[in-house]
Length: 147
Image (cartoon, rainbow, N blue to C red; front, side, top):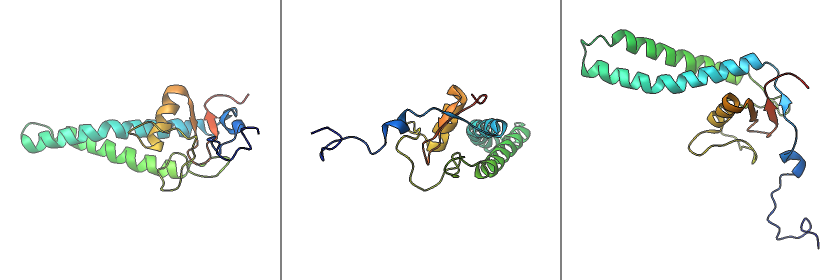
């Protein structure tokens, strides 16, 4: 009996063509890169805001007011604008929001690094490789020109 017809087979429900499909070009790449930049900015400004707030509280006359305010403004700007832009970015196939954290079930082939969210994993993959998978339908996308 072939392994595909055997009941106790441990194969995934994901088809082979789905694992090997070619990456599609993402439309609106500038918006995608801007969302990735805002996410990176929010990941960097959160710890700096916390440290600067601690320094401001520990040493009130130390001149940390301007730095703390600038860091807090950058954090709020990046989180709010990044969330708004992520909510308006849709996958071309499933019409989901691949760069917005949602409580829905994620696809088995979507990118997920240990200790990070699906969104953070997709953004890091986008920044370092120029490719990412939609976390909802697992369609691979890439940056660049249409082939």
